[in-house]
Image (cartoon, rainbow, N blue to C red; front, side, top):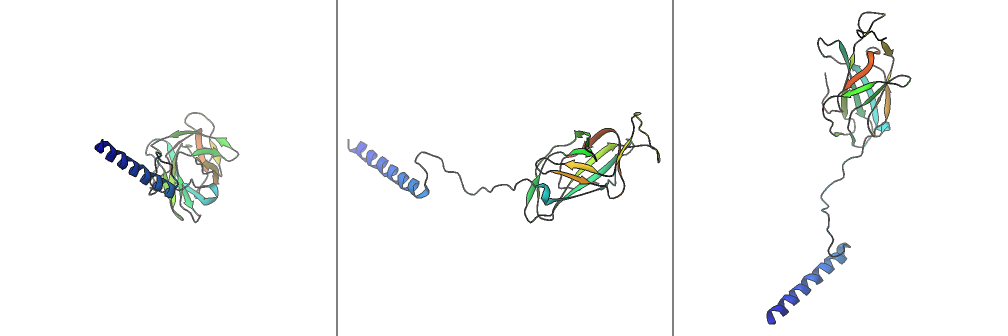
Length: 182
């Protein structure tokens, strides 16, 4: 009996300590307390935080009849934010292109003045001037494209070095990356 009485007192003491700790931390006894050492990830970059530019890629896929462009997203805000996913692409006037994603998407943290990129690869218009499409489709050319990113808005952008020209209303796109494609 003496032994069980000692156990009973120890149990009461433990319950009392738990109750005091719960009262001090405002946690109910028996509930889990999350560690406060984790930080909240930055939010998605809003459209207003991004300045977008584009140029023809230095190294389009060789021998494939395709052209490529690099689209750069610069965080012009004062806050770190995140970009993730594959872009949507539409010609000026909201003509959507079928996007084929390539690669695996991962979150890219973009600090103020930091940059992230996507690479777009198109079926190239052949010939000069009145170009043609190998498929027989009519080529399309736009002074600007509308590039969208999940949770980060749509951005109308012109190529620094020409017009957006393509065949077949298709584009292959890499996910947002912290590494500039060539």
